Image 1 (spheres, helix red, strand yellow):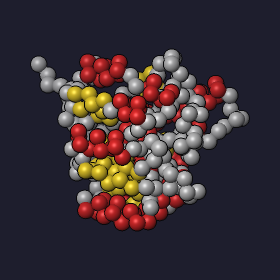
Image 2: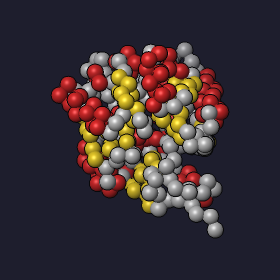
Image 3: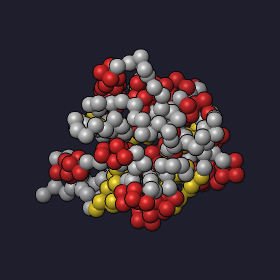
Image 4: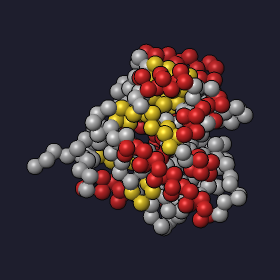
Length: 303
């Protein structure tokens, strides 16, 4: 997780992210203070649930208003691969920090075997924004991706070829018909359950997406368009230090779920860990999943 120093709404991302809203009644200082409180509350809730949280401070310069969402520029994989991603907004490209990768290896003891740098695609105007664009079923090596200005099929193919993933690509739109900017706002894939908003997926592609999830024995939690707008799709299954599972989401997302949906998630995914992050959701247009870059890297061998 990246602790914000100058969190703000990002005008460079607003055109493609319909979840982003303004808050003109708040000053810059008030926005940052609220985001900092919300960040610490989420980190504390995860730690209380047994999740090992590594929180790094953002840097004062350059100003990166969306640095609180690190999963868009980096992903970590169980074979020791670190992937760096091409991002649409120019000011978001400045979020990529090699110093964090070095710290994760040297201080935290994770083994980095290779760094796969896909950022050269930015030169061709093609983007793939990490596990925002990609929802990964790591166990079955399937990458789900809704095509958008931030999710390009060519870069998706490059990722899939180099990491040996199959692709389930599709188009998805919000209630106004606008393309949904990131796949991780419409679906989440855990070990035994998947939450997804089928209604937003193009009708002739919907069946193939749901079939792929059912073939891998995922119990489906079907979300409505209203729940999608409440960030219910933006949840993430995590492992605790004790090896059990929990499911992290925002309080907004949790409040939108029915009792039956909550029961399914807790039965197939694990206890729900929720925190209220309204400022981050409103101005950033992202929620809890976007704030977490989960580390799947292996630990270095001692001695």
